Image 1 (cartoon, one colour):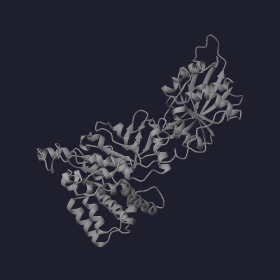
Image 2: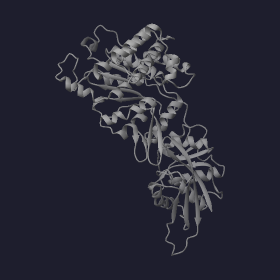
Image 3: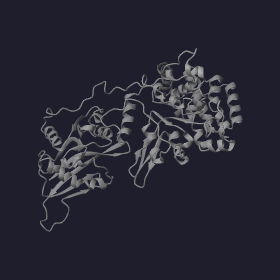
Image 4: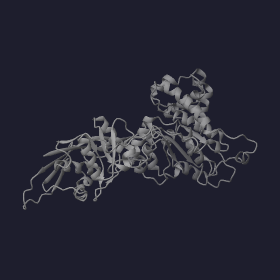
Length: 521
């Protein structure tokens, strides 16, 4: 008898449905030395090792493991099956073929995932959200997942999600569903409040930052247009403090954006019992991070920090301290907003639409240009800033000097408190709304404009043309820097609700590239 169960395999952040077929055939007697369970369909080591886990889990859950030879086929057979998430559906298919679930040929409309312990408990797995989306796409009405993954899978509407603690409870649910009696166990439901994205404002606030008006202005522009930004200043000037508050002025997540972020975190195994990721991510990897840690990789490619920061902020503190080869792998993600990881057998693409915030000191000791004495030689300074390549700097739209805060500003003597994150966010959201209308309702920012978009939406008058031409010649800017200046100028104009880019907008955008000549030419 052939019994079929359904599961799914995760590839990148997507999941593909996998049919699991179990067939029982009589043993060949005492001279038959072939394995009791044979798994075919390109299983990896973890899937092949599941034979002993499944046998023990079935026996220790009070079921009879068949004495017949069991053949398990994972279809489609030309796709490699990886991980331990197939344990539960394989066990259900064996029990179904043995007559412990129903007399039907398979579990109609049911998909299952989960790793089994030897005692029959079901352990959590990665990528459950992607699997739930795949189940809905192929028309499965019910999904069995480990209890710890149930809230995450329940984010997907249009499918009943059941959290199972062990194999016995999974069999009971499967029997009830096949008999048409699903009332004994209720599917997991999330309330509207649990599905609502959260506002970051109120945790950290720009009102806490003393002084640094220019840096705050630059961050407002960066968040309004999705631009990358670099802070250069001495230690203790507030670079990290400013960067950590950037998420508080970014627009709140839309539900579809939260769903996309959760899929990435689910594949990386970072969701746990939290369900939907409701806030924009902020990732700050240490400068000792490897290439695989930053952009993703491994024998089974997993997303790196740049993908985990998707639709949020990637903060690289002390930029020159990162290994140069690690920084260079950021070039393609910053341009394409995706990361493609190629291996011999497959090529996977992860989203990587981040706002990059980087910080660095102006010299090795950190005090060049400040009110403290700098003891670094010109050669040392040049060697230090040279750790960051020109091509990478070219991809950072805004370079802003962050000087040490003056005493009166630090103490707040005679100066009004700074603007709150809520006030700045209101202007940012207004500018984003303008961009949304400009690009016909698509989730789009000025930083993602194509050359065709730049020609259409970044037209200049004669005075602005002359200003940009002089800047290009004097600072020796590249064609990429030319486009990024226009994108930043478009964002500045949007913040002022200006339909056209004026000379004042362009002048401010050019000023944010003035450090190019000072440090890197």
